[in-house]
Each structure stands twice: as structure tokens, then as C-alpha cells.
Length: 347
Image (cartoon, rainbow, N blue to C red; front, side):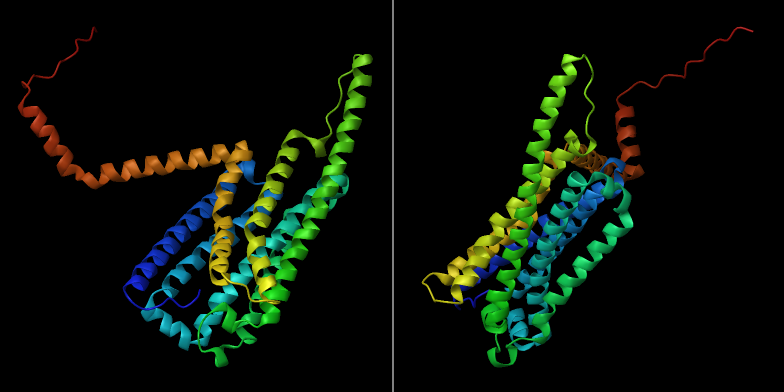
């Protein structure tokens, strides 16, 4: 979000950034809305873990809406308004911090939910419910909004008078607090997934020994519910989503953390590239869900077919009855008029 230089080249750059931000935002909003609708419409997707998927998809959709905000920000005539209006500038920055923190908290909650489900299945079934998960998700959103709103009350806008994150957001909040919170969430989530991986390996070895002993006595081994194929696929899906979040956002927070200690050449370019990579994470999960989960794949395919059928129906209706009647009359002129055939019925 650095100031673009004036001149003819800056106008082309501005149009490029506006077009990219609008296209990326529209794709994020449409794709993540597709995910939310799939979970709400199809019964097989209305599971407890997918409540976190809805929360994460909602966060990604808000990131898409933020891109529209950023696109408007890049317009020079509107940018002067951002530079002179504190509420407009700080709300955009607060929006970005809120979505990033909410994504990190959702990743922690997903990992902890899967750990409880696999490590303590009876406790999970007895205690965890939709109402309690909803309360936890609301609490995570509340914490994210509270953290993001700090920028609106604690900033350097009056002295900066220009709407850039490096001028408005204090160094402590931008580099140490935000980066520290992000890497803390990543470490907690990574530790939980490491414990899950170790627990899964131990259980697989136990199942192998049990299967061998049961086959010796010609008995059918019983499947353990927490380690069923569906639960393991769900754990793999969430682990991939977490890995993509770390891969996309770690460069940005690393750049911010390094910039707090030293100024290095190419910082502006590194900031723009890493920030774009972080925003890109909100659009990549749309492809991850159907790739690793066949139920999401079926839901996406069904919704796409419904949308195509709806478009075709509207297209036929938009042609109007007069057009259809005219086509029938035109076809009828080339055909010989024949009397209707009367069927003879026996009495």
C-alpha cells in the first residue's frame, strides 16, 4: 500500500492493481460463499468439524470483500480521502488484522477439536455439541475483532497524515504483537498436529497387531470410530489447510518482523509480494476442500449443476413467449397443415 508515483505509468499501474484486487475479491467471495452454502444445504456436510470450515470460509470471504476496499483505495481521487479521513483508513487496516487473527484462531480450534475427537472420543461425544462449538467460534470472532479494533484507537494517523500501514500502525503492534500472535498460533497448532500424528501411528500399529491376532482366530476385527477413514481424511484435510495458511502468511510476518530491526533494500517489493501471497491463501482453500473430501466434491458438482440449470431456465424465460410463438409460426409456414388424427375407440 505504498504511494504510487504520478505520471502516465502510475495510471496504468493503478488500473492494474484495481483490476487485480477486484478480480481476486470477487473470486474469494464467490468461492467461499459456495463453500458455506454447500455445508448449509447438504446434510452430509453438516458435521461438527465443518462448523469451523464455515467460520474459516466466512473469514476468507471477508478477505475477499477487503480486496474491494483495497481496489477503491488504489484510485487516486479516493486515496486522498483515505489520507485525510482517519476512520476510513484505520477501518481498512483493522479489517485486515481481524481476518488474519481470526484465521489463526480457527486453525487452533480445528486442531484442538480433532485432538479431542481422536484422543478422547467418549469425552468428545459426551461434551462437545453444536451449541458449544458455536459459542467457541463466536468467542474467537470476538477476540479477533477486539484485537483488530486496536488499530482504530491506537494509531499514528494524526502525525502520519497518509494511509499506509507503516505510517499509521505503531511498530510494536505491527511487527511484534501481530507477528508474535501469528507464530504463536502456528506453533500451538503444529504441536497439536504432531501429537495427533504420533497418536495415529501408535493406533495403526495396535490395529495391525489386533488384526493379525483376529485373523489367526478367524474373527473379524472391529473398526475404531475415532480412527475411521472419514475422520482421518478430515484430519488430513485440515492439516493441509493449516500448512497452506503457514506457507502463505509466514513470509509476510517474517518481513514485518525483520523490518522492525533493520531496513533492507527491496522492502517495499517484498511487502507487496508477501501481502498478496497472504491474501491468496483465502482463495486457495476453495480447491482444497473438494480435492481431499468427496462429499465437498459432490456438493460442489451438485451446486454447479443447479446453477447451470437455473441459468438455462432464465435464458429460456428471457426469450419471451412471443419469440417462441414466432419461431413456431415460422416453422409452421414451411409445413403442410394436416388435420388432427382422431383415434377410433371401440365401444
